[in-house]
Image (cartoon, rainbow, N blue to C red; front, top):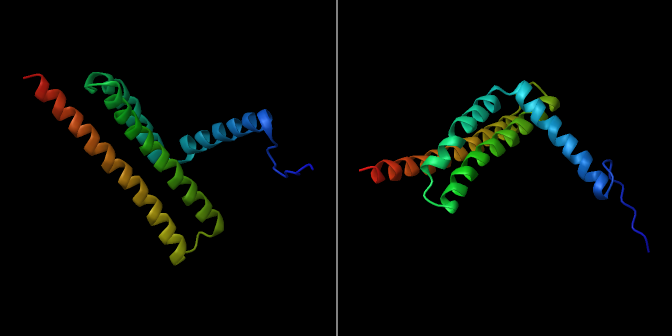
Length: 130
């Protein structure tokens, strides 16, 4: 018995290549149209080298790195929600406004986590210098 799969990007290894191409276009669109993404990517590029200085262990570095990636993840999701909402309607709608506000809250939570993790790392680093 053969199961038909109707996926526009296909199946198997070809799907992986097509999905990678779609991801590239997603990053390109985020860079081109979302100033918040560009700002947060700059933050990541500044903090990433510092993570090697501040970390106390491999797991600590992974936590610092994960907090940076979570911010980019949240911003990409928020940008996708906003783009989809704007494609539906540019007029005010309570549910579209709610979706955009919740997407913004996701970014806020990720930035809060990043702040807590990085302030703790900085505190530990400075305490170790004494």
